[in-house]
Image (cartoon, rainbow, N blue to C red; front, side, top):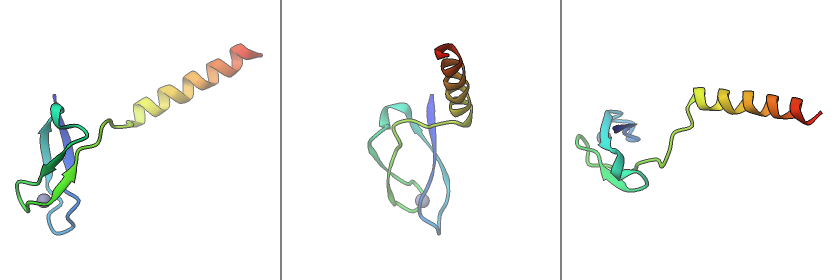
Length: 63
Ligand SMILES: [Zn+2]
């Protein structure tokens, strides 16, 4: 699965698709040649929600 990242260059801002294997590595934007670091993992909203729910359940169990 490819990773979607947005070019940090304000004059570019292109959405780039890079392979999963480039996580944590630097890639060059194909449009403006800016070097950018591919994030290791995304903290998605869904994941945060799941964690929050798990935390609630856990504190309930503790009581
Ligand atoms: Zn760019």
